[in-house]
Image (cartoon, rainbow over all chains, first blue to last red; front, top):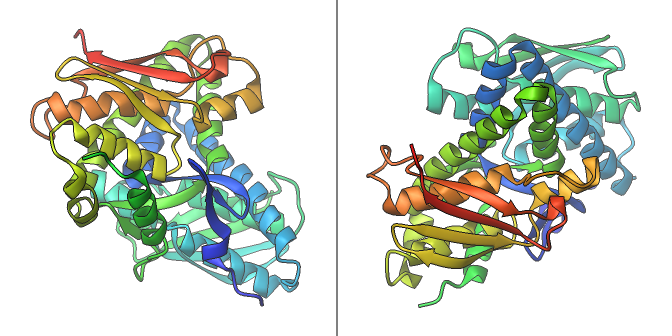
Length: 174
Length: 199
């Protein structure tokens, strides 16, 4: 696999920051967690769905574009490795997969930006809270397997925001 | 001394290459991450749409979320070792901090913020001709009836809170900002004006 050249991929055009030619912004946990809390408190399940779908859509577009640029990456394994690398290099955390295929599978995250941010700002919570990561997983799978948005459903079975050892995500076809 | 934005951009671009073992980017005193801007724009404007007739409530909530974020973020930024080493030597007076904060926001890709006017304790005027919020709104929804840069509006208020509000963490929302000019509604640039909050 041609390694992701992070220094080349992350660049600037004046005030704009781009990753792999697509506009990105650097924000910290304060903003992400405030947005999440605002949406959860105001809209409940609808807000959670919006957090999930926004991540799914943005990541699908972003990763489809990366795959187009790195055409030498052909195998599923390499594509997932690339995705995990992007996750880590973007400061989103660590993600690992287990038995993942076109019908779904299992992902684990021993550490991620939203967990660190939520715990730092609000401490433990009673419900799983990695809505962004769920959407990220859905978007990545849909990009890798060339499926439409909404094809996969990702559930967080275990969350570090609830003081579990790691976050565990189960993916199924809707 | 004038704030050299290039030094700050360099520090951010170099610093954002460093990840600790948990995949987190600790930079300028905060946990930084790099997300596609479409994510933020979809969240904000779909949230607004979902609240329908409560649209002004959505606007208030999004601005407040950003202001509280800007307040905590730039408090972290100005207490970081990067600020101490890179930005502080360029600061002669308290007001220069605003230029330093704007340069950090520029480096983070939030927009080409320019401080147009600062009346200590009273008013801050910031202009941006490349806000990703305005561009994103125009691309997705067309011309807007009102200003759409909720994040930058909240951040403008936060910068004044940090300089002239009570000591952290008591000073948030001492100021509030309005956006009378916005590219999303057809203006040439976006302009944010922060003044003391009325309530």
